[in-house]
Image 1 (cartoon, rainbow, N blue to C red):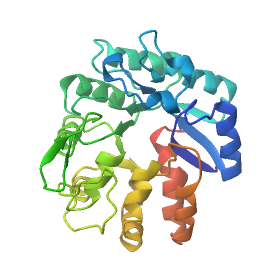
Image 2: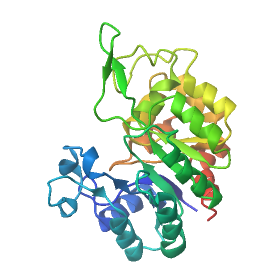
Image 3: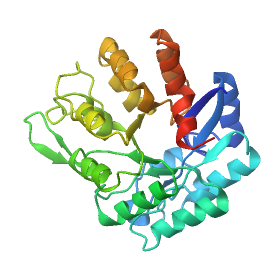
Image 4: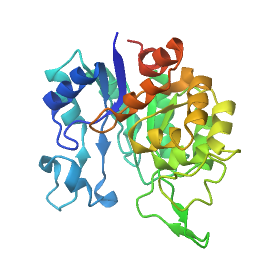
Length: 294
């Protein structure tokens, strides 16, 4: 089996299903998890109009993002290459039931991408997470912090936050011990360093400091995984290349290769690290394969 990309979207940054397949073939990627990115009307993100399909703009001008119908259409075109993911809006009264029906009716294998302006330990999300665990589906989390410090170390509210970190994540891990959580995005990866609360950048670039909450959570919760996708995962690894390599080796049984956007920069970086064969295999295919029981 070739590489499994554990984090991708269709009709995102100009790539339809055939465009994704072309990139996958070029980069030696055998399969991709196609995840939804649903944007509720009251959580509108104006920049969505620049990266998602205009076919998903609502009459009120808000954008729905990348919904389940787009994922399923791509899977129908390439059933042997795409693994469907779906995460309903937890504020919907029947979110857990919606997810279970998607698993049973449409073969959904992943609960993702969870990307909502709601704390991760909100009871409505916990219900969804527990149902996903019962169905043996991992949950992919997009986390962006709700506050970042300014140059005077005063916390400044961030309008486009998702989930909160690290307290709500830890409580979700505790409340759903039978659910595998796959962390992702800037609000997750910034906590690889002990100075996360003081760093004003959304994508920190400085040296990795001891005492990172992310390291503690990995050590304390075996149901916490992470994908290395987008600028946040790779960005964390290259803050200090040697430390990043050590992290990959130590937690290789809980890390997943993922892209989240066009290009192949993550694979290019990993190839430069001369990783042990078992570490490379775990990250690029074994873990993803195990989590969805291919």
